[in-house]
Amino acid sequence: MKKLRVLVPVHSTLVPPETLEGVSEREIDEWRTEYDVVSHLKAAGHEVMPLGLSDSLQELRRSLRDWQPDIVFNLLEEFDGIVTYDQHVVAFLELLHQPYTGCNPRGLMLSRDKVLCKQLLSYHRIPTPQFAVFPRGKKPRLPGKLRYPMFVKSSTEDASLGIAHASVVEDARQLRERIEFVHDQTKSDALVEEYIEGRELYVGVMGNERLTVLPVWEMSFGSLPEKLPAIATRKVKWDRAYQRKYGISTAAAHDLPEGTQARLERLSKRIYRALHLSGYARMDFRLRADGTLYVLEANANPNLSETEDFAQAARTAGLSYDELLRRIIALGTAYPAAWRALYA
Image 1 (cartoon, rainbow, N blue to C red):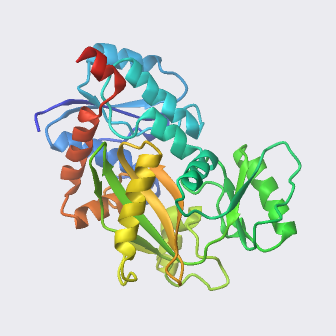
Image 2: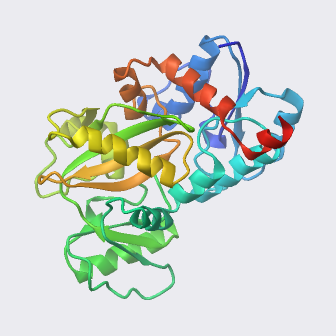
């Protein structure tokens, strides 16, 4: 790949330093992805400029005009503190005819809105847990058709924000309390779905039109006490001390029932296309003991840290981290945005 001028928009608090020297593990975890991407792109010979953004696009427009990057390597996961606003930043890039990496605006909108996402999956007869939505500001009317235990989470937030072991509820009292908690803490509607007991599996997908499915990855909950539900809480996903204490980790999935891997690949491609995703994404599944698969979420632009599951699955498939970044850039450069057909 020729040497490129790469603009890397990140949250204003996540602009990575030049070196890890003298920085604590906790500090590194905050901007690990940003550091990994920027440092590896620089090492590959690209001219790279991280750009911190918070609540204004003026600096982004100025950088696009003055610096004229070949590609924008998009690492934004929110804008102005709102997760669902990252789609508008990408739409802004498209309006300016600027190539970028990762998912397109439509795919971001459909996947970030968990309720709309589940409605689309249900329409396409893709298996997902039964669910109900409880709008913020309205008194909850408890569902009669859903069965306990239930899982309560925000309808929009990601990175397990607001998810704890208390998110799995066993009765109406716990359900009301957790719905109120989600409303108050995340300022969003609450999504309630039937809790699926089983193995937690992740499947990465890359591509725009032709898709590549990465090896199946699995979350191991280690020695987590049996009284606690095996779910990817915020502590399970991001607290290093908690992970070490209980031996929580992710690795390539082994001993899957016969035919499960092929079903996961087919389902992942169907989900990717149903949600109009592009670039790269990760699908989260639950596999019950009887072999039934349920898709929990579709994550556009998942974590790209070198040590996280997407990059590790790519490595298992034969892609080094540098090769993975090159592939993502190539997909962004080739993405058939609508403006390309008019201005080719």
